[in-house]
Image (cartoon, rainbow over all chains, first blue to last red; front, side, top):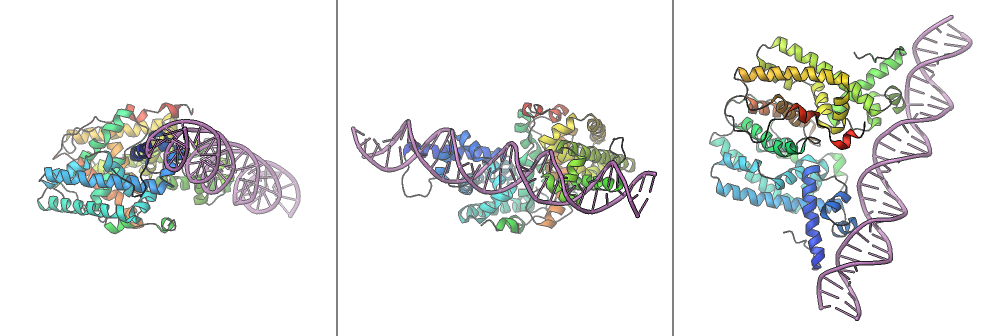
Length: 221
Length: 221
DNA sequence: AAACATCTGGACGACTTCCTTCCGCTTAAT
DNA sequence: ATTAAGCGGAAGGAAGTCGTCCAGATGTTT
C-alpha cells in the first residue's frame, strides 16, 4: 500500500512487519489518538519495540506514514462515494458515516494538536489533505445550493463537528462505544440539514483556524 | 458556598485560600479536565502545592469538592431556568447553552473515566447528580410529548451529546475556542428537534451505561 | 504586644512512565 | 552453508508528577 520511498528492498519478513506496524498504528491511533506509548503499538503489531524503531526512528515518522495512508484512503473512498451518489447531501452523509480511515484522519489532523503540527507541516500529506478539503468544499457548496443543507455553516464547521462527534466517549460498555458514533453522527447531520435552522452564534471555522499552530508547538520544528 | 463539613473553624486566610483553590480547580478542570497536574491548579489559585495538599490530601478529594459544587450549581441554575421557561424545549436549550458549571459537571461525570468513578461512587454527589438526571428526564419527556423534540432519543443520549460537543477542540485560535461551543451546540440542538428526523441506528444510551465502570477502574477502590 | 498555633511556599526525594538504544540470537536470501 | 538483514526485549536514561516536610510568615488570643 505504502511502499516506503526507500531505495533498498526489504526482506520479506521485514516488509510484512512494516505493514503490520502501520496497520496496528492505524487501529490504535483511531481509538486512542497518536500519543499512545510506542510499546503498545508494537504489541498490537505483534513485534518488539526494536523492530518498530528500526522502521520508524521516531513517533513523528510513524504518524506521517499512518497519516498519509489514511488520508489517501479517505480521498479514494470519498471519490467513490461521489461517483455513486449524485446527490451531494447523500454523498456527504455517506462520507461522514464512513469508517476507520476517516477516524484516523480526523484524529491526526484535528483532535491531536501534536499530530496536527506534523500533518500540517508535511508537504505530501498536506497536498492530499487539501484535495480532500476541496472536495468537502464542493460537496457542502452543492448541498447548500440545492437546498438540502443549512447555509450558515462553513465546510470547516462540518469538519470540526465531525471530529467532535466522532471522538466518542471512553470507559463505556463495548457495544455502546461501537454503536454510538453513527447514532450521534446522524443526529448531528439532521442538525446540519436545511429546515428549522436556529440562528447560529459565533463565526464559521475557517481554513486559517485549522492551519493555526500555537507558538509553543511551532518551536518543535 | 461549600463549607467543608469539618468541625474546626479555619483561619481567615486559610478559608480564603480554600475557596480560591476550589475556584481555580473549577476553571482548570473545565478547560483541561481533572487530570491536570496539581501544581497547575495551585498556580492558578495563587498558592503553593503544599497549601493545596493541606486542604485536599489527594486529587480525589479535590475532584469531589469541585464536583459537588458544580453539580449543585447546575441543579440550582436548572431549576431557575425551568421556573422562567414554561416551554420544556426552551428550558432544555437554555440549560444546554449555560456556562462553566455545566462544563465542569460534564467533564467530571462523563468525559474523564477516572473522575467518573469518583463522582459515581460518592454518595453525596451521586444524589445531586440523580436529581439532575430526573429533571433532565422530565424535560426531555415533556419536550417529546409536546412535539418539540424527536422521540427516538433518550435523555442520556442528550447528556452524552452535550458532553461531546461541549468538549471542543484544543490548539485553535482563542476567539474560536470561545465562540465554537454555543455554535455547535446550536446545530446539535437543531438535530434534536422534531422535524426531519432520520432514523437513528444503534441504541439509546441508558443510565446503566453511565454507571458502568470498567473492571480496571473498580480495582482502585 | 507577646505568645502561640496555624498556615504557607516550594525545594526535594521517590516514583512512574515512556523513550530509545543496543546486542546476542534468529531467519531469509543466495 | 554462508552472510547480511532483521528481530525482540532488557536496560539505561529523561521527563514529569506526586506528596512530604519544615523554616519562616501570619492570624489569633489574651
